[in-house]
Length: 427
Ligand code: AMP
Ligand code: GLY
Image 1 (cartoon, rainbow, N blue to C red):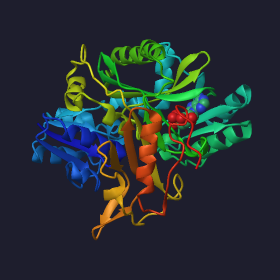
Image 2 (spheres, rainbow, N blue to C red):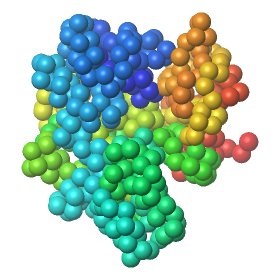
Image 3 (cartoon, helix red, strand yellow):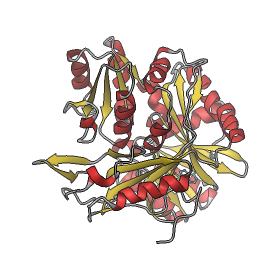
Image 4 (tube, protein in one colour):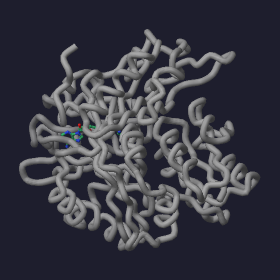
């Protein structure tokens, strides 16, 4: 079959790598892709959010199946448009993508279907939001309702900070329309974990567990990012906890969405806080996590493509996925300045030799481009280096050894990815 993957990040590189290995895949395309993806797929320069351009590309290349990586085209209705053009697509419709596209929608769904989450209020008026903040006190969390490229959440340690975040979203309109409404919610304490399930509208199949590292600095310090590294499996997500999350969070959501007339298909990604009162939902994403996907794909023993097709076709019931017992560690190499303004255009050398010929090391590209044959940085998160081995410590050591062979003085990474599973090695 002829497959088209949408997106250009490390997540999409990992998806292309897994799909290219499927015996079902006769031809693989990616729009727009990146120089790393170009080694697995034919890259076509159509933007991920150019819905009509993607439909035209899918028709022109006689694509049988489209796999959508990022959230923006999902929220904008790419899957609806492809399906109505008769092209099968993996991912939720716009109505179902509201689980990521509107935090207020998700909170109301949780309230209606008794899904554990932080207590909250929804506000379209800044004064009312601030009055709620003053009533509840700090710490408290302020979130822009819509998509804000991961920057719309403020965990405020004081009432003044929360009020400033409300002003930034609603008065200064820093996130545009996405911040016209805010959710103000209770601060949850605990360890965070990512939980992924493939969903076919009615059934859900949990994927292997993973844990992200959201803060930019070692020891979970500094500003939030899209994710600086991940590892899998995550020991904090015990089998008992996995069952609890499936029963109390994922399945009520799948059933609730179907009951609301918005059946969800695709990857449901629950950001969880493991509190003393049990797992609570922080937020939903409607796609694979990045860099969690890069940590998961090397552990997948089964063929990814039939699983994605089963989710699309509504036949996941009874479907099984097998995973290698190995642990994987994915470390993000970012351009200095990230998550603020990353330095762009600096040359990266030594990638070809970095893996040292080891087949259990893989370098996924995210923000790279080729200029006159040279590979240069072209984004915040630029590469994800993934290694897998018998345990987290061995996988991590291999990933960092590969990173140390990459010549890119303008890049940086966290040195403690996987620290919750094994303490970082002293340098
Ligand atoms: P989100 O974009 O919703 O994932 O939020 C970004 C980060 O903010 C999360 O990964 C958490 O670290 C933090 N966060 C969000 N909501 C809460 C909450 N209710 N309590 C504590 N931390 C939160
Ligand atoms: N790793 C966090 C995310 O994909 O949103």
